[in-house]
Image (tube, rainbow, N blue to C red; front, side, top):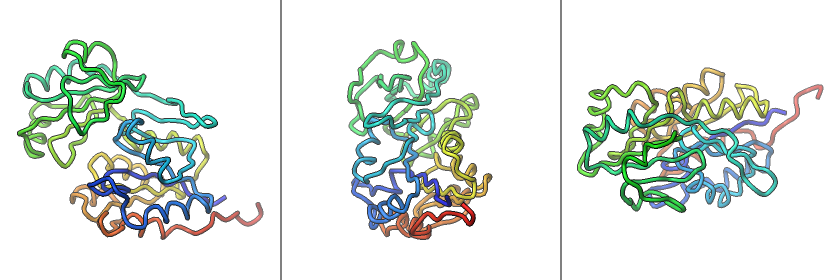
Length: 272
């Protein structure tokens, strides 16, 4: 089959800032799904904050990539299991960050999916989460660390990362002062490569789309295997530079434009 594996970021790609769908995305996704393409999500969000969009879009993938590649979910019948989890000892990096950002809010995601946090933040999905002291936050390996520091901007975080020498972990800085830290060498691309290999897709039948710095690893991976990497029009310049293509802004339906370049039907190769 010449079907494609399609991996989509959520915020700023599928969703607008108010969490409504980007124009044309539901229709474009449905067209690809019905044509036999494997459309899935690759997001920095946790599974708890991702599942509803899998359902809203009517997606039927076998695997979904969450937590910037540290968590890959697998569909088993009508249920989902945590299929592949990456963890690391976050205590050194958290101690380093706390010494520089004592007023920041910290959250970790455990291998089980439970979230521990030092202070509540409305932007965090905390279903089943638990507020703990900093010592308990670092007591066991985690799949993800999130740091939010009110009063600091993106430039401050870039300076902090450089000064702190965060080279033992993978990290991405969002549009605001939001630092997302994953195990070293783990990103959306490493997780999607595991999915691609498992499902048997050729590298030149891969398309990924995103808008953030946490999509750069995914873009690099897709192009290295001969696939397509599409940056949203509003993405930072460094993100666009890492992609092979740029589409329109999310507000203008850029993702739908990119998806509509794929064939309307997955066709069988000659002789099969």
